[in-house]
Amino acid sequence: MNINKLLTHFSNYIPLNEEEIIELSNRVVERSIKRKQFILQKNDICNNYTFIVSGLFKMYTVDKNGVEHILHFASENDWICDINSFHNKKQSSLYIDAIEPSIIIQIDNSNLMYLFTHYQKFDRTFRVLIENKFIELENRILQNISSKAEERYQFFLEQYPNICNRLPNVLIASYLGITPEFLSKIRNIISKK
Amino acid sequence: MNINKLLTHFSNYIPLNEEEIIELSNRVVERSIKRKQFILQKNDICNNYTFIVSGLFKMYTVDKNGVEHILHFASENDWICDINSFHNKKQSSLYIDAIEPSIIIQIDNSNLMYLFTHYQKFDRTFRVLIENKFIELENRILQNISSKAEERYQFFLEQYPNICNRLPNVLIASYLGITPEFLSKIRNIISKK
DNA sequence: AAAAAAACTTAAACTATATTAAGAATAAAT
DNA sequence: ATTTATTCTTAATATAGTTTAAGTTTTTTT
Image (cartoon, rainbow over all chains, first blue to last red; front, side, top):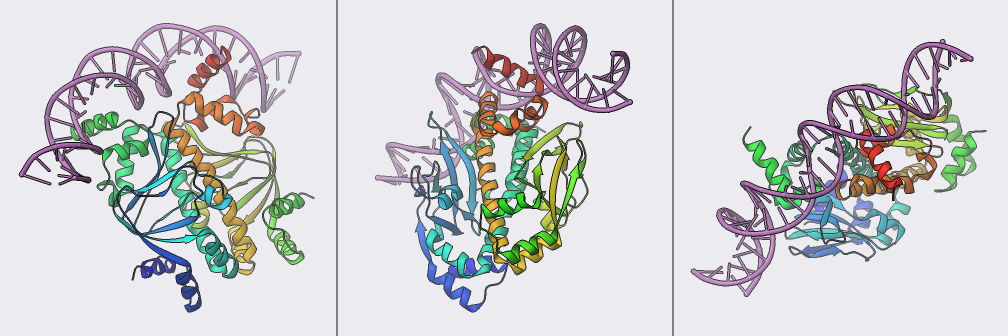
């Protein structure tokens, strides 16, 4: 059962007891998502925290010229959510769609709030979860303000070995904030070293 | 009393009851910090969450060439902490020092853990705090991967009107990830518009 | 008030990255 | 299996940002 993958994930933070497992299981929904299917679109309110059982997603904006800028990738055992839209119930400016066919488990706003209110553990676990994501983002900012594109690319390959070979370079370039043409040039330079 | 500023800050999230106020008050320490004084240096373990009553701090790395890269500014009613070092008790790669003479209130790791364990409210409040900081960082990443330096500068001025005129341009440039010379050029271009 | 340190500006030469365009290679859909 | 769509590459030209260096202004320290 896919819910087990979620329970194992939680137990990496704080193990859940029987009651918490039941409460959680009753409040989540499993879905199967096709490649290119959206789970969030601009102007929607993001009403779910999404846990990825298997597959791969990208979260991005589209600028006035139609160019995508990728804020996050998320794959198995990770979460994806527009937290700003989710907590403040405001329209999202982001899209989330599947890069690979995926299986996800979602918990919606009211059910998550119920868990937060009735079981301290969830507040705690989601605090730690977001702290870890915050640390990741801090590192990414530091990279962006202090390193050239080539270093950022190398760092990306090292840091995300499990997803980098599942991604076309166009998407990696978008994540790094460079054009695909320039990434191609960088790859050429690296290969000659 | 400066502790009131911290209590008011908390009450913007969830008001504290009498007992919680007492517990909190007994577990924090107030300090006065001079300009240029460090509250965290590289290789130290960050043992405190720091609330700023008044003043202004910068948090940054120093690269191999001795150049500072500013990850965060933090001023009155804000928190500053190397969360990675704090939670994982590992050596920090960051510095935090005061740009202005400042008054701070600190809570150390063991006291914060005590509050987390005994009062759900703190877990909750710190979750929401970090969620908000996460959202800010997401916006900054989006800016960095999708905008030119001029736009990022204009956005910075709009988003932080309270601190931008207290900061020398050298530090703003470092935060934006550009050289001071180039920021000077940008400012010249803007002024001619 | 004077001296020292830090910040700001300008400009020329250089390097990193973007843009445009086109063809080749690969993957996805029918 | 074929077609269609997407991805990758190359190269020439353009723009964004850095480096170096020097002079000026402002702020801080003595």
